[in-house]
Image 1 (cartoon, helix red, strand yellow):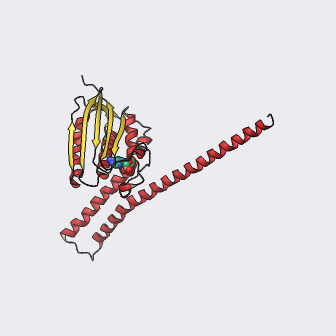
Image 2 (spheres, rainbow, N blue to C red):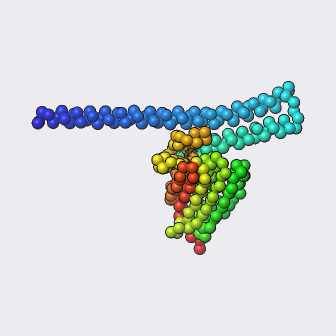
Image 3 (cartoon, rainbow, N blue to C red):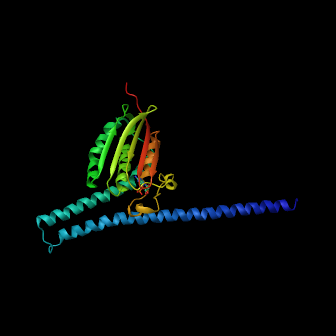
Length: 262
Ligand code: ADP
C-alpha cells in the first residue's frame, strides 16, 4: 500500500491537470470565438455607414452628377443619417469603457425618475413612430425621486428601449411603467417582440453575449448593451431582472432605492 499510494496521488494530480488543461483550451477557444464575432460585427457595423457616407460624398463632389435640389437633399440626408448611425454604434461601444475607465465612479444627483422618463419618452417616441408602433406610458410611482447618475441612467433606459424596438419585428407595443414596491421605485420596460428562451435568459447580461439562434441573427449588435445596463443598475444599488417568453415578448424590471422627499 505504501508503494501504491504515491502512484495513486501522482495519477490523481496528472488527471486533474489534464482536465484543467482541457477546460482552459475550451475556454480559450470560446473566448476567441466571442472576440472574432465581436470584431466581425464591429467591422461590419462601422464599415457599412462609412462606405455609404463616402459614396454620397463622392456623388456630391462629382461634377458629372447633376445637382438638382432633390439630389442635393437626398445625398445630404444620406450623409446625416449614416453619420448618426455611426455615432450611435460608437457610443454603444464606448458607454461601458467610459464607465470602467472612470473606475465605476458615478456623479449622483437627486432626480425625479418619472420626469426623466417623460423627457426620454418625448425623444424616443420618434423611433416608435418610425416603426408604426405604439407607446404606452404608465408612470404611477408616487415616490419617484432617486439618486442617479443622470448620464449613465439615461443610457440604461435608452438601451432597454432601443432593444425593445430592435427585437420587435412588427406591431411594436412598448410599455413603460413605474410604481412603488416595498419602499423601492420599480421601472418596467416591456415589448411584444421575439422574446428570449429560458436557457439564454441567465446569459443576456454577460459581456458580448448574443442569443445565437432565431430571428435575432439578422439584428445587428455587439452584445454589450445589457452588460452595461447591469453594471450601472448594480452601481446604483439597484437590481434588474428579465421576464420573457419566446414570440410573446420581453419585460425588464429595474428595482431602485427611492429617495424619500421631505
Ligand atoms: P445586442 O443587442 O447588441 O446584441 P445586448 O447586450 O443589448 O446586445 O443584448 C444581448 C442579447 O439579449 C441580444 O443579442 C438579444 O439576443 C437579447 N435581447 C436583449 N434585449 C432583448 C429584447 N428586448 N427582446 C429579445 N431579445 C433581447
